[in-house]
Image (cartoon, rainbow, N blue to C red):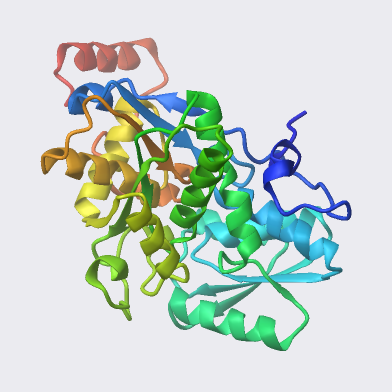
Length: 357
């Protein structure tokens, strides 16, 4: 039975004797060594942290279990969030698990169908807002201050506490902190959480150093890079389509304290990384996750060497969150064949000989 992050990292979390030790089996996600990109970039120790292996398919479950446990401890009967998709799926799952009513505000037409389907299946009450994520977040923050309902977006500090456990796992797996961590940046809670986790393990003398935090926003949704909010952020990576991150200042602190960077990558760079991860590494991720790898490739191209360093790219969510994208960009179309040996064998031979027309 999976222990869950609350039990496994109890001494590092804000847990009391009254905190319910709930779990859906979150955490303990694989840290996979690269077989292809490491050779392409000349990086011996390159790893992917597969957060899509969490119960609802994204890193959000780590923070959500902590936030919901705190809500239960406080006697809350309902939870609330704004979401581009992953937060709603996670909140709805843990809400269902704990018999809490879950209310979700999502921006109209800006949520991947796979993510919305999860929230619907878990029984969330979904309000579709004729606006963007930032406007939805403003609404839920105001609502939570006015009504007895727990806000479970990453502005909730318990979310950050739960999400920092991924940093603990990386150190536990490698034996120390990596030299570099590449991570997508949307609402900026995750880069904040990872940095907090790495610092805590360093101060506890479990790790001998802390990594450089390399955060990457999508070019059309890069307010931190540009230095001002983006009223209408645009990117194919819906999970990081955020124009005014709630944890903006904390992300800047993580960047500066770690001597890292926060940069942007184009949608084309994201899609190239998305395809190459699937076809050459066997890692199928959602587009936002590929921003971390696209960013690493950009750093390498710009001459920032990682040759003798250990690097971890955070793969924040599974590609099953946004399956329509895989169909849209497919350049290896399926073939329709008759159900007989001759048709199939001919297609196979053509494939092997390169006469695949």
